[in-house]
Length: 114
Length: 115
Image 1 (spheres, rainbow over the protein chains, first blue to last red):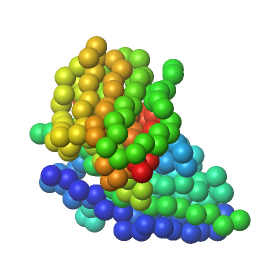
Image 2: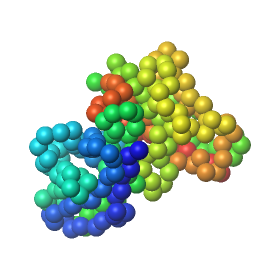
Image 3: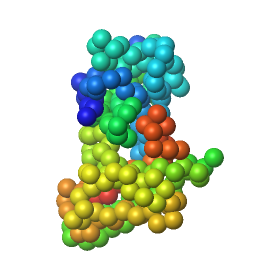
């Protein structure tokens, strides 16, 4: 069974600073990997996803993520954070065979200082 | 295209009462999910439908929760009787198909408070 860990519950950055949110997964093979964002009072919106191929994937709103097989990680990055990026971010792992299991991490809440 | 619709957006009930949530997925999406999101946690899958059949309900507390998707389109999730620990946001999502590479599209959720 797969699992996903987001080690940082809260992160605070200044507007314009760079951002990296961590995600580690456990799975017997390379899973499908996703990052979602949830603004207050809203549902989740997909930022980006990784299935195979190039390990650096680009998403919406200027976000990117890098898949590192050796570290079982899929960290989310943004070079320059905007105040509107304040939200909760969830990493998710989807099984690639055997089941349709899709597991979300516990989330990282991002606060942006003006 | 229209997104996933959910109603109501907010609901406050007393413990032991019953409550029902409604979800209308994106048109043409065969797979529908109900998640429970407790404050400070990630979404937890309660039940997954493919058309009108249940694919996974392993984490649904079946003594009090029920869900249906009778015509393979919209869906209802019911809690009867509610407990204090059921206070959470209930999210509905839909996708084109079962495979996990399909993007899930989420509704705005229903925030349930059980007093």
